Length: 505
Image 1 (cartoon, one colour):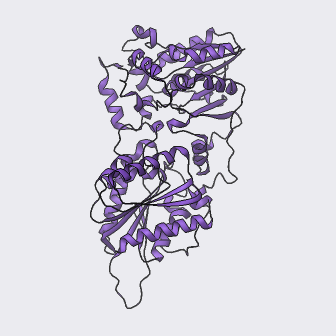
Image 2: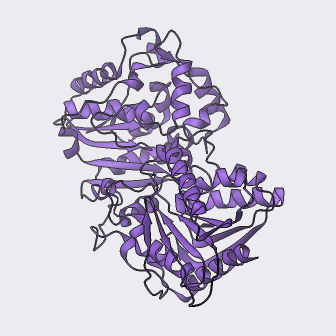
Image 3: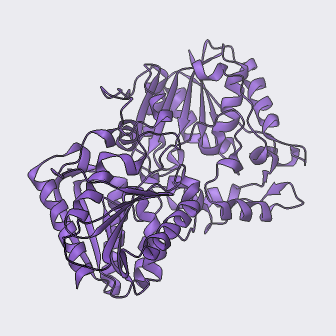
């Protein structure tokens, strides 16, 4: 018989698994919802010394008490930290680890260290009572810790009412792993309303993300649930059925692309653009228009292309060396405008602040170049780099003649944990005034990303923002490298023509 050990995230307890555990038992399995020290009805057992190792020890003792041969251990959200720690100490007892809308923390990583929003980390630490316990979120605060999509009102009431303080040490102590856990079969259950999906994972795989490439393994499977971060409350029956399938080794398996070592960004630009020389200055490359003999055209307008991400720091080629951005830079230079490409440091979800600084520095460097007309500059954002457009939308400088975005993400996805970050174009567009915005929208966009575009366009319409939408028929996210069709070529030509039109008026 299979036994399921069910571990929830912070501020909760075993009660949150009540329906799921019942369904598993009805299916003939054993179910052990875990209440860790200080959680649920054990809230009074915690003290200042309660830490991650305490919770790992709780789970190890529970595993040792289970007689069933197969033990599937499920970690929800931040609850995956003690789950991986316990599985690492008892690898011979664990048949599979299920990451329920959870990441894959590695040796040396803590919950706090993985929170991408520095302000959220600071707020959480400031809230700690007596210096060691963090109060449960209020009803208004719970959405910052994961989408509540699908959670019935009565279940949300219970989540708020039964939330207990979380010992700070369970969030701040680093996870220590021997490496044994890495060999265990693993299943990821992705909650699409929280911003995670198999399609997004496969996109990252195609880009050569080494962490995703490591998941190309017959022992690693994936499922999706069309709900928010709390499937045990929103879709308990579906979750129980999914856990049973995971225990049986079912699920979607990733397949490495034929050239996994060569990212998709190196497969060629969709337009036939003659290669042009470029000048490298720090993090930027400049593509300069041809000079006509005997003429002095003076400073030229410029377009700065801002790539998406996160992009691993060691990925080669870097974005500005990829065929996509070499193509864009060369294309606009051939049309008489200075093309500028940039390598910014968006290496993880928590790097948006640093990447925004890189973009701002690149803008100043470009505008200071005597060959550039400092009063006629456009910024063009791609994919998840779209969040970096928020600063410029919120306070457009007079020299910014146009802002473009191609298959953009225009609001942080709930799973990213960015809270009330300033990098939220759906809010910033209300302050954009009459800044021309050119948005290229792909027909076959990831659903999670498409939602943010819809929200952005709704906000833009409400405030009367000047947005031109260029639809890309049958286009996918990253279409420059995967969809070389007449439709996608025309969309690029039209978008470039529109941006350059705003620059030269």
